[in-house]
Length: 274
Ligand SMILES: [Zn+2]
Image 1 (cartoon, rainbow, N blue to C red):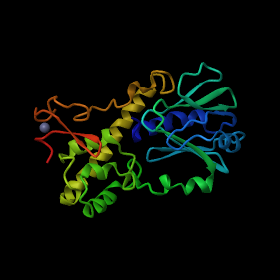
Image 2 (image 1 turned 90 degrees about the vertical axis):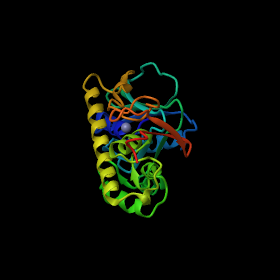
Image 3 (image 1 turned 60 degrees about the vertical axis):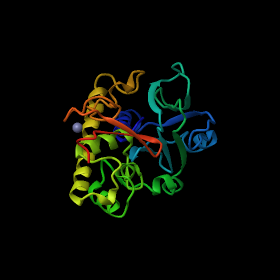
């Protein structure tokens, strides 16, 4: 599942390949992604436009097309790839942007939880999914946002971390890892945590994201995310708890536990995390 570091890795690796290039054609399939893809919108707003910049907010990628903006969310399984024009098209390729100079930017999303919208700049700026985003987990000031939200919320602290309106960009994996590093039990009510522990958690969010980003960057040098093996380096960060149910805690040796909460699994060490 692409989380902030994977989306940022995608952005950095794509920027040099697409910024400054004109989109000369679009082949969009009218599939039902989370937000739908409207082929007519891509023809009207993307074709003929030049990509002026590529930015990120939380897990959303935004391409500045001048009068219009394109928004892409990779959902559960989405991937953006740059391939040579006319290269064989794999299954689940929902969107192809043909770039002047001969490459194609393709959106592949087998599970279809992603989103690909293009519209006038002001329309995109007003999209609720963007307006409601909290501070960016990587670029934003996470500590005050998290301290303020925790103080007024009895929700489990893990749910608070996953709430994109508080801090944008954290998903299951990095929430689990930040909580493990901070020694905080994922299901602890947020308002019950001492302020210094919330501050520590904010610092660990920054640390784990920075490490994951560095790991993603390392992989890019061996050939880039755009090839078929592009996902290889994702989540190369050393995971302490996520997906390690029943395995020994790297700190104390106790068995890592998994507990379902809110339809998702929380992984934690019952001894180190309180
Ligand atoms: Zn432990």
